[in-house]
Every structure is written in C-alpha cells, then in structure tokens.
Length: 134
Image 1 (spheres, rainbow, N blue to C red):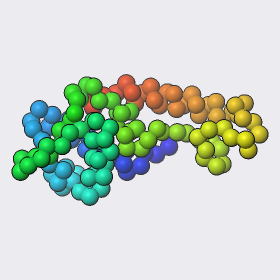
Image 2: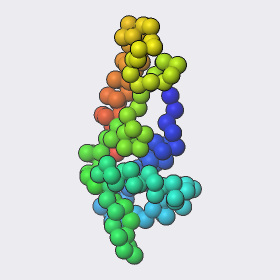
Image 3: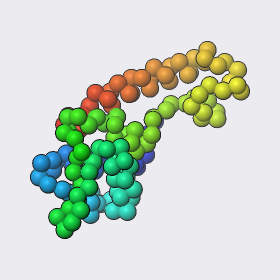
C-alpha cells in the first residue's frame, strides 16, 4: 500500500499548519514555496480539508489557513480520509470494495479476512495519532 500524493502532501501541509498553530494564518503560497509543492494542487487539497472541517480560511492581506481544531483533536486518520476517502485494501481482481456475486469464495476468502484485519489495524493506528503527536 502506498499513499497517494494527496495523502502525503496533505499530511505535510497539515503538519506545517500545526507548527504555526496559534501564530495566525499561514498563507498557502508560503507552504507551497517552502515545501516545493504546487500551489494549485495544495488549493485542491485544502478545499477537501476545509470541507471536512479540519481547517479554516482567513481572508485578507494577512489571511491564510489555520487549523479548525486543536492539533490534539485532529487525527491522522481524519486527514487521510478527507483526502483519500476511506482506505480500502482489496485482493479481488476487480478491486471491488465489497464481496460480489462473481467471487466464488465470498466471505470465506482467506485473503479478504486477512486484509480486513490489516485494515482494522491500520485504522486503529491512524486514528490514535494526532497532529500534536507528530
């Protein structure tokens, strides 16, 4: 499993907001410049993070972005789900999220059961780490 650039860049940007938490808004162009990332791409990511109520935007000359909650209250899992959707592990050739009629093993599939356990462990870990822990 590999996180997409959405997840990696989003975590990095949220870490930057955590570093400046309490110091006022952080302009998006500063994050993009400091981290050598596309500002246009970060705008897309920040739209998703704002929709998930993880960040707030402040308008004006001194504007930028701030965390919507205390860093201890924002979990890594919240960020990843806002950007990537629910992370699913699939062993089926059609990559479906659910067992379908074409699967001859259905819920008896050993790989499905193992991957379900791995996903549960992954979710537990990302939901136990906050921005404050980074």
